[in-house]
Length: 82
Image (spheres, rainbow, N blue to C red):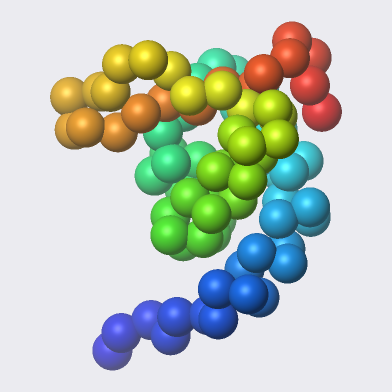
């Protein structure tokens, strides 16, 4: 059975609520989208939307190099962010 996709507008509305859980996940160092999704318990496709919003507003930064699987890592933009 396939997982039901949520309306993207619903996912986008949750972005402000997800900033803190994502920043907590990044406390231990940079993570990829799938790693963040695993840590906070949400689908990677939703985490991608939230992280891109956070990147746009300067809460996270994208690392310059992709890992062996082609995923870029993300880190909190400010030390001690939370």
